[in-house]
View: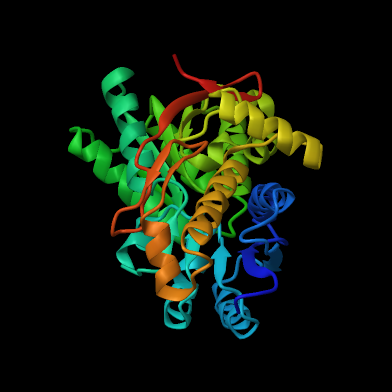
Length: 348
């Protein structure tokens, strides 16, 4: 349609253990849309944003992909869960719906879909940056790993293990748990026996927090290290402030003070929602802003023309300078932070 509202869907887990991801993403996307609508929308048309709950389930996500197609949504923001995004991608490609995802698994890139774009780096970028810091800067040689067997955890496992091995380090322990596991004592006891200098963790926020909490109860004093989930308030709250202290984090958005643009975004986010912004909200804000810019530049194109417009959009975002390649990745840099006194700060 060339008139009426421009319909954009946000699909994420809004219920269940991964709901914090979906809530952050929706708020970041909505903030961007609200700002554009206050300025008149695009070509005088308002942008209509609607949230759908995939419950963190690939089958539910696939069904929602078909639903948003039938309801004439022209683009999608989400999901934050790589496994769900991977399941949805074939349907979205078939239906010609561009998707800007917050997932980071390298499996997303492996799909080679012209309609799939990432609003942040891949696991390879997160973990190669982290591995270089741990091995080269800190001099750690005894590194243990604990990851889960889901799409995110598997991606983290493969990316980090390759990165450290490329640097001449073989993990002293490599433990894999399930995504729904609650008791990690067996895996952590094996890790403790190897006396690591640092423990890499590849798991979502809640599970990662439980792992760290139980590790401290077992007397493991080594710092933990990881990617985006370990920099979130949910991770810190679940682990406990004392247990999370010293966690090393690779992230493209370390805090709301990293730049004037970040401070402006954080202030608007706080005014809108009464809470502090973090990485996932910033990623969704960037991804949505890129989509809206592409819609404006393309005169509200749809399908492949919109996908092409996204790919040709250069955007100076909160996470850095976005320029998409043919693989759907627009940014390839992270920085190192550390949790101090319950907050993620830049490691200097």
